[in-house]
Image (cartoon, rainbow, N blue to C red; front, side):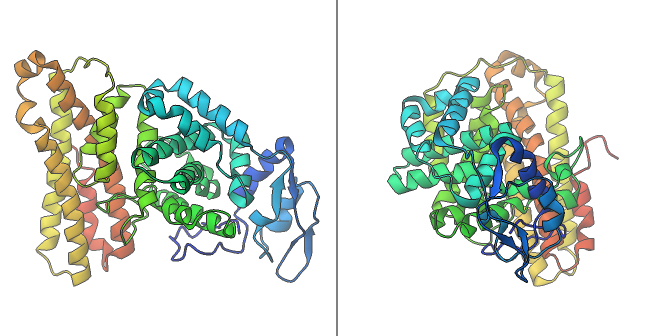
Length: 435
């Protein structure tokens, strides 16, 4: 069923979709309906057997009120289809545009580009996931471009790590489908206003990987089970710092997919993207799979990079000081919490979170930021080193909000007394200029 996320809870099961239609997904399908012609491929009935929409009838806005409050007899995803469905040629055309617009991606794929495209063209676009990808092509072309980019990088990683034919197809399909759960999010969650996202919005956003898993499973065995396992892992991290916070080991396909998602976001940028990709994967020890980090690093060493930019030592000092101050405040808050009377489960949670914060601090010291940032003459004399310190510090500043959200999600969902953790959460927002 089209998922209802109004309670903003992370579901405990990834096997079933709820019975009531999700209004955000339904609205997006209706928006795409006039161009692609969305129709009912079977009778749509409620659980009492009452006919709500007849087979073969074109879907329009009139269906919304009939469905929105009903519990349906069968999943809506299996009851709708587009006459003009998304095909392999459209996906490949989108992928080629991505390669033209992002030369860093083309350089990363290198001589494997044609094989990557050939495998991408074999991806199956069937049942519910295929229908949503068709709507995505019409309603959010930029999101389809991102999906194609993730799929291409995922295939390239699978090729580099020697995955077989089935593994390459899984890489293509999981890359295309990884974000389909976003269809079920409210617009204000999917496109938040400027400023820090509220926790409630973040919690709702963190559910979309799980929804994507349910969509694949709802397709009834069309897709390999590896996809259903990997899709909810595409924002996870090996060290446990991702979301929606898997409790066990990440699957082999998931290890590729989470890296492909990060690389796609970085390589679609415009500022020293190859350098940033290398730093992001290697900066935090244990955050990304070693086999993928090694493969990407080996490839990046063969590619030319942009010359280092000019670094303002004074501005760099401010950035580094701010990052280190926040990390020190968080560590101090964790120590204060540890000194109190905690339940064993809370103490275990605090230990895991403290380890993650320690890895961020270690990364700052490993790059020499703390020791070198005050040496303006040295930084000016060695622009390559200055550029490295600058990029690590800036990447760290960009990643800290994500760590903050992860910690808050863990505290609110797992701590026995979340209120006692508030000073630790507040410490993430304490800038170097704060009292």
